[in-house]
Image (tube, rainbow, N blue to C red):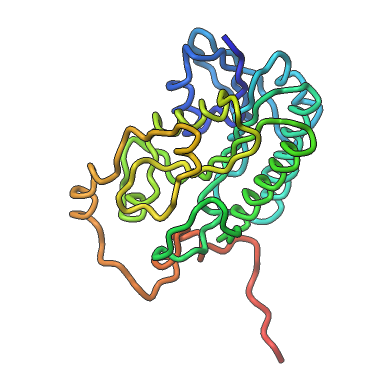
Length: 269
């Protein structure tokens, strides 16, 4: 079997993918947090993506990288810069130097989070990040395009909505992706013969969705799960919406109003 590296493998998405990809690939798992319990076909190598020298051993005999490692939410600029921007560059560069064939990047809906919820968008829209975290994802999408065009790395960027066993609130009825649907997209990124550089949405078959995922369907994606199957339960416990709230109007939700590290706005004298 081909060997696939998963960075950030100790996180929640990494844990899901370990289950769904096990037996299909030999999995090399990496994180700054230890993973002590390994299944057959798994190995663990600790590494920090900000340490470029530590990444070389991860890339030995690797077919593809699934890059999940990074600060997983909005934060101050310094950790976003160090881990999500410089760290992601380090992983791309290490993959290039070791002639890795495939790179699947865990982008995010927060790269386009300031689009309004009443606007359906495809993957060709201009990025509209809702946070510093979203900026880091938009940067990495551009970096993936560079490495695909300039160096021949085959790159898929998945703008992930929310990965969970089921959607838990109204917003997630629009953006939810089941673990097995996300895994299907990852496998397309690792194997599709004609792929060079693609952006797709990591979303299941959601009737309330905001995203046109035609590009993923063109590559053979057929989602197996639907958020609408959980809608009755979610709506029964949903609080009354606040229509004047920015977080209720834009696709990125609370990320559009969370402020960490930016400080108070300057006022004119």
